[in-house]
Structure formats: structure tokens, C-alpha cells
Image 1 (cartoon, rainbow, N blue to C red):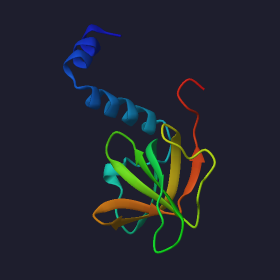
Image 2 (cartoon, rainbow, N blue to C red):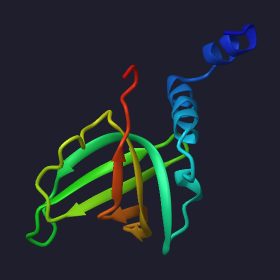
Image 3 (cartoon, helix red, strand yellow):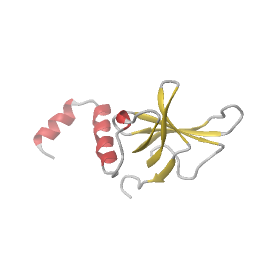
Length: 122
């Protein structure tokens, strides 16, 4: 690590360092767009890490909801009719593809296609 990098890391907050690392990892996924650049009502691809995963029924239907973070922003992922999905857990890296929409003011993908990515160190 260069002196410039060491100084930048020392002066930056832990959150901004984490965001930079996530942007670097997400950029390795070919064909993906930064979450902050995803446009509503269009198909999109994104990659990042799952920050949270919860089971939350919507109108009586079991639903798995997850928050994908790529360093530029967050994308809500919603799988309707599911109680669990193997491998979908906090800290897991994932690549998703689907229709992006706005739901309660947040970027959201319903029932996205997904590809689980190796965890750090795998």
C-alpha cells in the first residue's frame, strides 16, 4: 500500500472506506451498473453485498426481502412467495438482474434473477 493510500484510509471514515471497497468489488462484475445509476422502469444488472435479509409477508404472501449494497447506493430485492432462499444471507455477494422500479421511494427489484458470488477469501 502506498503512502498516499495509507493517509487516505487514515483520514477517511470507516463507512467511506467500506463504500470504496464495495464499489471496487462491484466493478469486477462485467455488465453491471452502479446502483446509484439504475433507472426506474428499465431492466438492470447490479452486483454487491447483501446487508440484510428478512422474511416479511406482503398482503398475506410470504416474501423474502434483502438489501443489496454496492458502495454507490442500496437496492431492495424482493422475492414474492418465498420463505427462504438457500444462500441468500447477510454478507453474501450477489449479482442480480431484473426490472428496476421505485417502491416507497426506494430502488427495488421484484423477483430478480440472481447469481451468488464467492465470499471474500473463497
